[in-house]
Each structure stands twice: as C-alpha cells, then as structure tokens.
Length: 211
Image 1 (tube, helix red, strand yellow):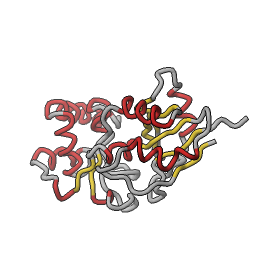
Image 2 (tube, rainbow, N blue to C red; image 1 turned 45 degrees about the horizontal axis):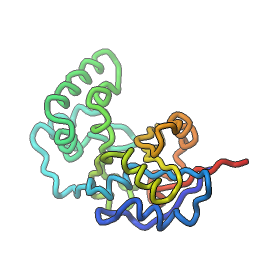
Image 3 (spheres, rainbow, N blue to C red; image 1 turned 120 degrees about the horizontal axis):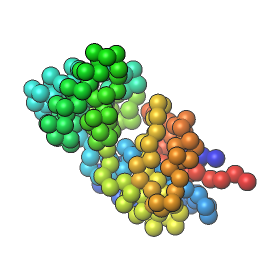
Image 4 (cartoon, rainbow, N blue to C red; image 1 turned 90 degrees about the horizontal axis):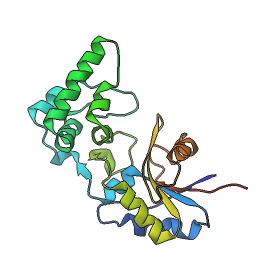
C-alpha cells in the first residue's frame, strides 16, 4: 500500500531529512520505504528560482520556440525554463539537442531533444496554474545528489528511502538509500502517481507491504 504524507510547504530553509522525520517519522513501521518527490528535495536545496529573477538570453528565447508543447506541462517551452537548461547543461549540449530534435521532426519523431539534453534538462519544472503556491511562480530544477539525500533520510528514520520523479505520464527513481533496492519495482508501485500533481501538499509517502 501507499500512504501519502501531508507536510507544510517545503522551502530553501528546510532540511529534508528533518521534514521527513517530523511528518513521517511517527507513521513509519519496520520494513516501510519512504519516498520523497524530487521537487520537494530540490526546493530544500535552493534549486527553486523565482521567475522574475531569471533573465533569459536571446538564445533561450529562440530555442524554446522549437520545444514540443506538451499538454501535461511547460517543460522547456518558455524562455525562463530554457534559460535554466542552458545554465544547467551548457550551450553546446543544448544546441546539439536542438539540432537532433530538428532532424527528428523531419523524420516524424518526437522526444529526441530531451534524450540528447539529458535528465538535467528534462527535470526542469516551469510554473503552472495547478502548482502549489508559491511555486506556481518559480522554475524548479532537478535535485542534486539524490542518492546522498536518500541515505541521509534513511539514517534519520531508520527506514529505507528513495527520491522519486513520478508524474501522470512516467516515473524515475533518482536516488535510493540502498543500492539493492529494486528501482523498477518502485516505479511499478508508484506509476499511478499517488502523491498527486497539484495542490495535495503531499510531497512524500510511505510504501508498506500488505501481508
């Protein structure tokens, strides 16, 4: 079973391990796994940047025009998110990704841009109307060192932990406290996005085996 854990809004002054202990610690049982959304981890790492602090360069304004506009999120389809991708991934890689994407479109193929740009670009979240405030006016980058974060949370709670990127389309396990943890199984358990995608304010949850 999956048990969503409601917390306060997590920000740059929070220690994610302490937040996990405060809101999930008394709910955990032996054998449980705590999973935490990558966005919550990133926000605690000062990797959420207000939109009005991002000044996109001309290249960002140009490249974002060629990004596929998904109905499920902004991605790199606005100058601010593209600017952060240029900073995260570097100009050469992003230009190469744009070139490969153009070739893909000529062949009727989508998704090549992100395959070349990599997860650091793919993980960037732009603001949407359904995003929990104040992050509906922020660009949030992917988390740093997710394995390390998972280990620190695990040490704090005494349970295994994982940092996950799960949405309504797909899922990835970014970090685990124990290398022996089965990432494919975790994705299968979480594939229906039990934490939700908008204002639920449940950035972490518990996986518990049902006997």
